[in-house]
Length: 105
Image: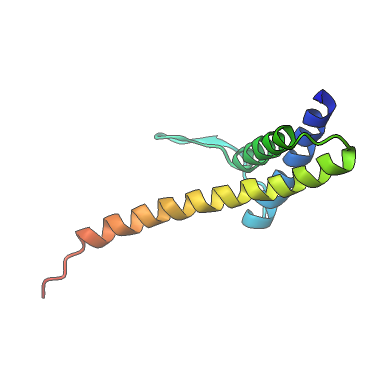
């Protein structure tokens, strides 16, 4: 079981890195700003690893092929979770600015 988890971590990490490069066009390194820490490519990699490990553990995959396929599917699922979170953030930002606009003539 431990080797399945290790394979899931490795494969999920590669899928997360590939998803990051596909989405951004390049690898963005982590950086710290005054208000927060931007994780860059680590955000995609960590979400994909977490999704892959959780799916492999919960499904009880016993062969390398199943671990490989489940990790790839879960890696793309982690990318989808990040897209949904970004949509929620942009939706909050747009609704906040719509209420503050001046519509008087």
